[in-house]
Figure (spheres, rainbow, N blue to C red):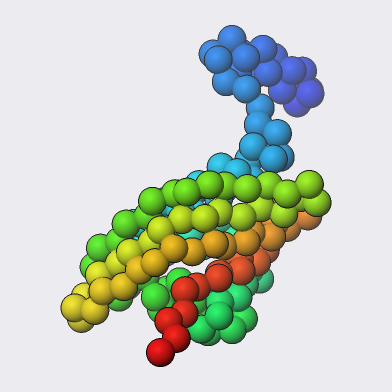
Length: 141
């Protein structure tokens, strides 16, 4: 038996179990939700798994940074964090963003937080992140 018939036999089983294939839009929205979850749990491996190879973060405070450098240097400093998701948006031109409140307590005792909007750029035809633009609150004196 070839692999194609095995695959065809599996498809009705998945639907009979109540599972449905996600559209790319649904998969990307799920990735944004997983990103927020990884942010709250400060889980480096979960966060890195959401990115395509060569993924980057662009933040107002750090500039453009490879995800392999950004999250492993930030997350281990977090003692606890909280994320309250506002809204996840998808624009007509295929861009995704999320508004959320993020607060954290660092192991050294510092605390911070605020309301953020991150923009998510996905690798072509994929639910893997290519770039996340982090729009951070900046206090002006």
